[in-house]
Amino acid sequence: MAGASARVVGTLGTAQTLAWASSYYLPAVLAVPMAGDLGLSTPTVYAAFSGALGASALIGPWAGRMIDRHSGRVVLIGTSLLFSLGLILLGLAQGLWTMVAAWLVIGVAMGAGLYDAAFSSLVRLYGSNARGAITGITLLAGFASTVGWPMSAWMEAVSGWRGACFGWAAMHLLIGLPLNAWLPKAPAGATAEEPAAGDAPATVPAPALEPDRQGWTIGLVAFVFAAAWFISTAMATHLPRILEASGASLAAAVGIGALIGPAQVAGRLLEFGFLRRVHPLLSARLAALTHPLGVAVLLVAGPAMAPAFAILHGLGNGILTIAKGTLPLALFGTQGYGARQGWLMMPSRVAQALSPFIFGLALDAWGANALWLSGAIGVAAFGALVLLRARPPAARPR
Image (cartoon, rainbow, N blue to C red; front, side, top):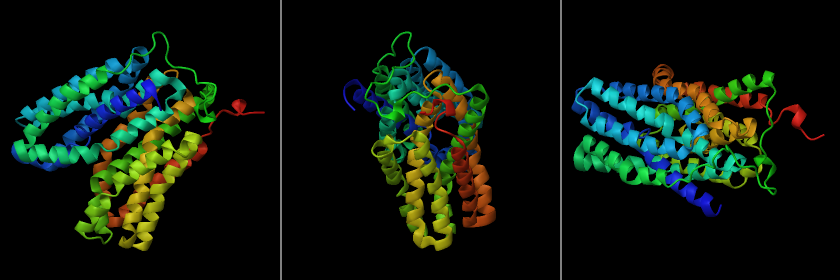
């Protein structure tokens, strides 16, 4: 990746790292001190965060249409300001409703400023050649928790949870805003660039789907992404408890959980290298199987195989994150990509908001066997991907 594309990947990848670290990964560190200071329970803070995820689901289609009509640069500049406003309001919160209002503002920023908007912006700039750039920004932003959790913990230790919120708000204004403003403008009157003559077959624009298949295909893809988000959020929220319930000690559970981040990056490197030569549908099918395989290994072999479970889950989750951008591009093409992406991800946001609560109930009731639930959802996602075809029959070579 060279020239302007490398600059865009570096710029957008860094801005995405900041956006994820200061929103999605914020409650893991600040929920407890925030709840204590405001006189609330920690689950109440997480419920407000779930409300933010719900708001992000509603705003996604609108943000996608804005990117289709204008450019990602305009939308992402606006989200830098919204993230900063929301974090300032959160730092100033004095009770339940002011905290909820602040999280809702952050949720709007998340709906218009995280991966879906970034992927749509890249498709707006590079059309069907955006796969490599999409992979590149996920490689950089894959370190959001690695950077965000220690940074939030350090700011909270130095200046309290309110100071941490103000610190993240300042970073959006001083770092995120200039980075998003540095993105190039999309070509006027065009939604995508045509692929170069030497591009690999996987980058050729997908032909238009037949009307009777389009709704079916959209439904299957939306289900796959919702299943992936449910599993990912459940593991991110409950992994230490899951591993302890399987027989691992708390210290071992924390250490094993630390394997997931590097495994996700390894999965994205695999996608950037070998898997970029194959259709995104094949890489998504392989990735969908890794979590169920890890579940079977852990529950059959016991806690000794917990590291294998963490690595398998991380590998698949890393690849599926990229598939959320590349699979719709391969199946539907570039036309209306941003708005379609917003609608496709709406069920995912809902699943993401419900996942901690639903999986928590399963964990309370079944212990480590709750993993059979997430494993079954992963198998169902694989089944949906098997039902999908790379191209309509008429488009296949004769």
